[in-house]
Length: 289
Image 1 (cartoon, helix red, strand yellow):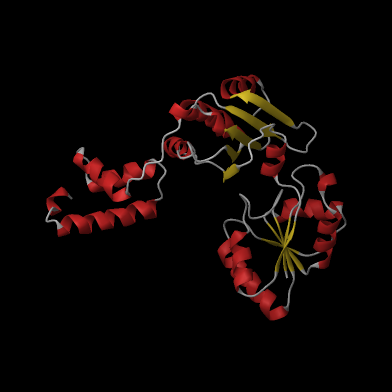
Image 2 (tube, rainbow, N blue to C red):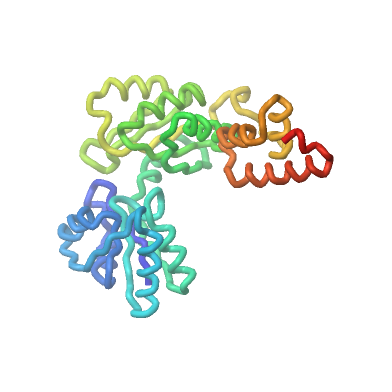
């Protein structure tokens, strides 16, 4: 049995009795950071052995753990440093491999930062899209934000403290002065949520000398964007868009890069480029390439 166990995101009082029972009953706990998890286990007097499971070893470690679970009948609990595993944290590969091996996978629900932030945002729209952590590169970040236009009513993102200001500035440049909610240190002593237009939230954030501490969750109300700011969805094939860029003087490689910068996945652009090459060759237009 594999248990996916949610742990507190800051307040130890949020640890559920069921989570404690599961962590005591399994044969092994796979933890993102064993040192961090050991403090949690010691607090609740849990003596179960630990093994590390993090983003740098998850593929190989998942394979080894699944093998042991099948051969030894070992039960394992998967935890992350805070919150629910496999949501912006390692775990999905382990879950998939365990399920494929016929191992029952059980969720032990509990704290999740994005759900907590969404619940106190004050926004009433019925739909939201969770985007996780945005790209670090400025160009990729702008493309990432552009893809949200017309696609999400509420957009929910995670961000580390020293990159929040850059994210808010990018939001202003890309999406305008949208209404948003920015939460930090959820469930902790100094929990804080800023609400309002992006300009106001950025101003308050920059005025706080201690702002660059703690993890942040950003909720943006994109359903309030004026209609003229939302780009209509165009029913144009990727091949046609590539060819249009080539007619404007770009070579095929550059045209592909430009579509990727607009947020279109690399594999889709590459496949479209191959199809376009085939079409041009059929028409005897190889020189366009």
